[in-house]
Image (cartoon, rainbow, N blue to C red):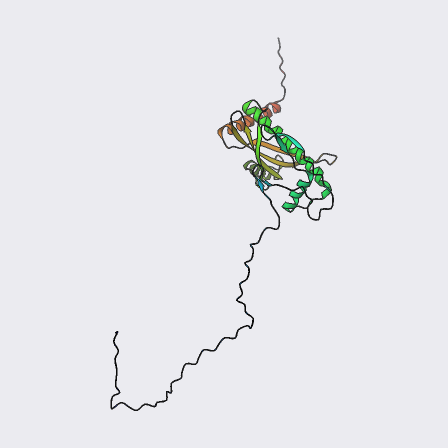
Length: 264
């Protein structure tokens, strides 16, 4: 290794034909190429995006900021005025309900087909149900703290399609005892977080929205199941006390009035 060496042909070496008869390696043939140069760099493709503009999500209600502009293919004009609720948002203001135009835009965003002429009525029903839900929250607060005059709804979240534990339990009861319990799931669910300014405590409420049989004239009827979530010991105590009172009241009602007589 590392040194050069020389060799001589031996005298008795056989004669060798100077022409090599072993097949020689043929030069590799060039692969046919397209006459058009494809090596030109191409612009990178943009990532696919959702075709619906969701806007900025409001952390207080987990909803995007809905525009007041008309939706694509919208034929009828819808009001853009918003109604102030009776529900305090903080020390200085109250919650505002979406306008019919914003409500319609929310339906379009979710992919729901809704006749435009029914949107105003739907908004009125929506606002009415929220006012009723707030009244139920105030009843629970009076039971828990003895007052309801300063509570505030700090944030909320719609959770349609997510069954609460109680709604799931009632569904099972409805399947087992259809004559006593409703076998239909709630059509909507909200979680509301209520703040008690005096103590700074926040309490989560669960609201299940049910459809009820309509009135004889065809007017829709709804049922609300509002209660504090079982997130802390105080809410558990309140729920147990309310359930006990309800059972006791039902028992006394079943017993009915009794008359007593005496003989001398």
